[in-house]
Length: 112
Length: 153
Ligand SMILES: [Zn+2]
Image (cartoon, rainbow over all chains, first blue to last red; front, side, top):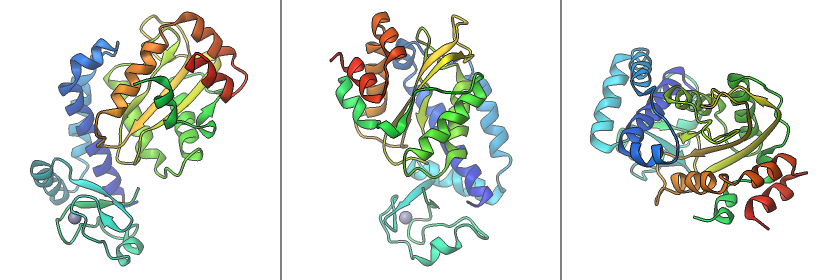
């Protein structure tokens, strides 16, 4: 996987963890979980975000604001964000030189 | 959600009856390796990073001798549960300072309708309040015996 895509996926996982912790905090704490590291996790998130190429980071931010998720898995050659088909030629380029975007919706593509 | 439903998300290939690691970092790595070899999941680094982040948030070793490492990641497409057991015990930063012997690792995709994953987590935590059951799980000979004990069969 492209190293920048790896970072973007990790960033999205972390953003979701922060969001879910804030949204479901009470429910999770009722189960016995603690979240004393939330501020530290937010700092780690900023640090990770700083390693991402600025143009990709701003694209990530725009997509997240619009759709909730910026990076989407490609399943059965479909963008799972908008269900446009992804040309098979994208797959061969995945690991090479750039982070791929869906030509239809612009979301960043990830092959799980 | 009942335990039978929860157990649909695991399999014999996702059962590690004798974890070798004794510290937290190595145990997480060993369990992620188990997840990848027991399924068609491809991206261990992403899963490991997510589980490590979750531990930074606060230790998931919340039961007596039990931990529930969990979280959502783009690296999986369906809820997947790995079960691991350590005879020696792992230092998992538990609240009571005691070693952890049982692990239920839940990894879920970013979206799951009906919060299957939180419900599964809640069902497991509830079921594992039973000290007699925990002792049985520590001794279960194999996956089938382990699941039978969990189901209360
Ligand atoms: Zn798309």
